[in-house]
Image (tube, rainbow, N blue to C red):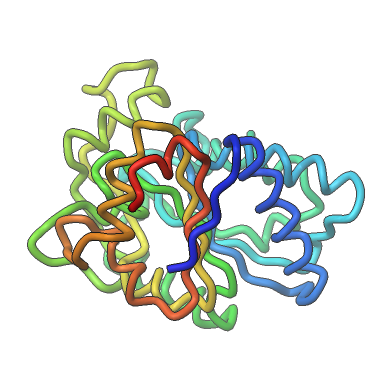
Length: 242
């Protein structure tokens, strides 16, 4: 994996936003995979800032990694709402070009299959942006003995539910126990992957992801197998790299 280290989280966000803008200029119909959580918020704010000038995403399409099971798109705690608030409502990105899993689908397996078909019809993901979860997950691919390849129903671990409690008024008990998520194979089929991690709390997991073995116990380590994966860090997150 190629590693890039920046001074601060804001520097990471600004550099990646400019990178996205250049990629969209080269390929206006670019397909971008998007994460949620606290880490990408500065990136989304930078993309909104660039959209007032050079960034044009009017022909782009996006696919989000995941959504909570049982939470509707209109629920302010949903990832649909998160993306509208931080990004989609502020860009010239047509509503029909944004894709987020339906957490209240009556047939979960059909919804997962539909999402896979939608990605394939779009031509696959050109740029997949990832965050790094508290337990080393990407998307909602939790540490396990084995990982699920395609988009699937995922059971959330305690660390992941704690990390998402801020969306549910700080109440871990209110965080759903399950979610829908792209699988590891879906993620790894992207032509280019950029994982961003910031803050000292991520340093240990970053070091294991980059320098440790490839293991389903640390799903992010599978990025070592990708031919075009990058890890963008601030100095604090990079502190434990050899």
